[in-house]
Amino acid sequence: MVSTNELKKRKIQLVLADDHHVVREQLEARLRREADFEIVGVASNSHETWEETQSKRPHMLLMDPLMRDGLGLATLRQVRTHFPDLVIVVLTAYVDTALNMQFREMGIQSILTKGIPSPDLLAQLHAAYSAVGFRI
Image (cartoon, rainbow, N blue to C red):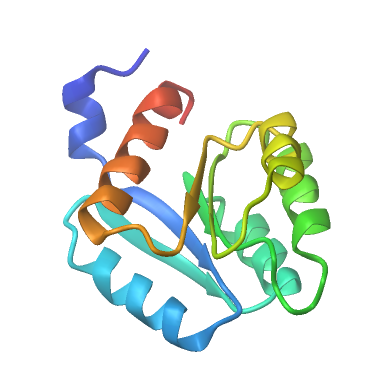
């Protein structure tokens, strides 16, 4: 098991996936200002999300699975199947009870809405990572 101090020293390698250009840019700029995050990949669709996750093997995937290509949920399932220890945080504009249940069944660590304030987003990302960080 990795100690809390060791987790604090590590950079959380993250793939960021969202089909909205402005959202991606804003999230990327915000996360790059954080000393403990390292963005190792950025994706604008489901195919890129799979490719980036597979090739970069990040600690965390921050993804909006409701992408316009319609393959986000399938990609999320594929990622979870192939990378069961990957920390996955969903950040989306729309979550209903049925989607929430699907995300929970997939073992998604955190489900957030895009209106979340930046400090809360960072706190949730850290909490999700810390909850399973010992596996990374």
